Length: 328
Image 1 (cartoon, rainbow, N blue to C red):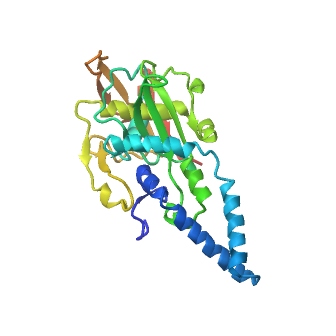
Image 2: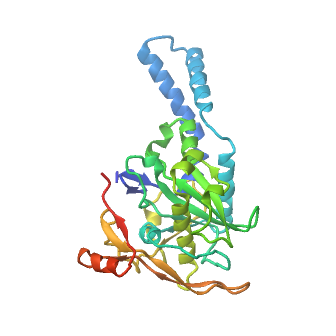
Image 3: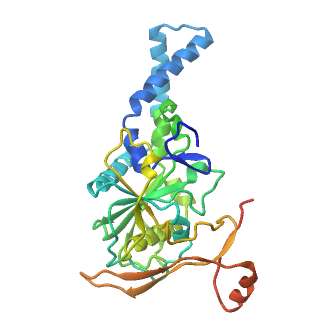
């Protein structure tokens, strides 16, 4: 991590939590346009042509217009604004799940519905960082985290908004405004009806908001399972949620009110090599499905490493495993 970076790195990329980056976005435009003007003047001076104010302004307007035409869907930033505002109305809580995220990702959610689920807090942002399906050759594919929003319309359920990392965020002031908007537009959102079986839901028929190309390339079921497992984790009687030192690793200047907590640091094995391991999948035991006024009660059985010497015997007994191997 560079000395000037106030975030921390995932796969070599400095990470700021998405809600904080989003807040900073709205004061970036003037700085980016001023830097564009400086670049235009520098390029004209280097070329040795007309460097008058009139000529420079003409070139600036041409570059700014070309960038404006690339900015894409104008409605998507409005959707993110609604999500962030709802997040702030509920306390602006950021849950850093980078440690526990892979364990939740390797947990199955068969037979689970989200009705009568009452998590520790609603309207939160969960940061998971590098997911197990992250393509290191395509940093823009990094699903950094997701907002959990309970909704009653158009269907009653959980609106899941998955957002991506912003490569080269530390150079943001020198990016074109269109590049910044394109990065923030790289998200997908969909609603899981609260009475639907998460594992059996037909995700191809869901109304997806956001980056259609990202939605096509991502496994919506895989992402929904991760977010569902986060919801179930937060709905336990005593989720492992602690005040964090993360706020000291993240620049908050120019951002809005935020509480940052870390999850699961004391109850999972943090030494698992997720790039090369065999696991018994985690699972949920539903002790009570819950009714109106009484929440669902669950227990989490985290994933467990299957050592090579035990793998064959376990499979012969009918056991199921998840295998993670190094990418070639």
